[in-house]
Length: 145
Image 1 (cartoon, rainbow, N blue to C red):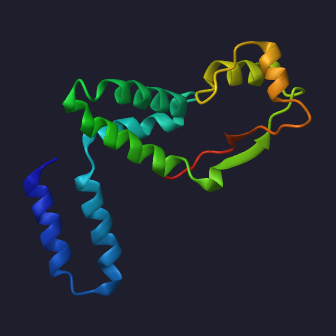
Image 2: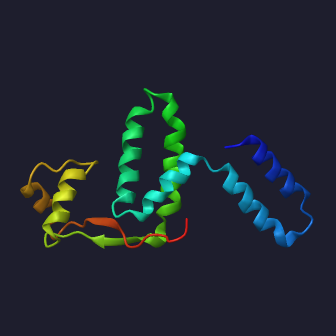
Image 3: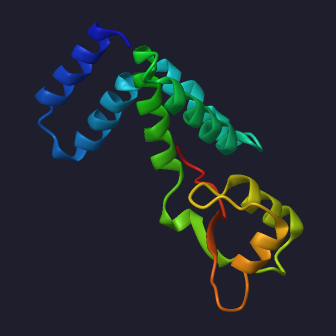
């Protein structure tokens, strides 16, 4: 970020007398305030596994940020990017049953973080007719960042 450029954009915004141009000046200011790192990270959304990469990166950073304080900015930017990419409109709530695809059930066993699943039998018991299990799935990506 170039502080002189930021100062110029703030000055342009403050000196603007035309309310119809407020949005343009606000967007100009947002663009100069965005870090180069954030601009690069946002490009990952166009890749097939881009969202997963960003989620995994944030997970790694969260594990390390107490040890390496310089990761706090990166973590904050990753969180902001994820909040802008993933919202309620992009999520689809679906029930998971024993009849769900095996690949999905394997992921449930692998990634269940609250109550670890010890075996396929344990999973079958949890998905029995007297229990309900739901998961959010990303249905589409935002096209404008």
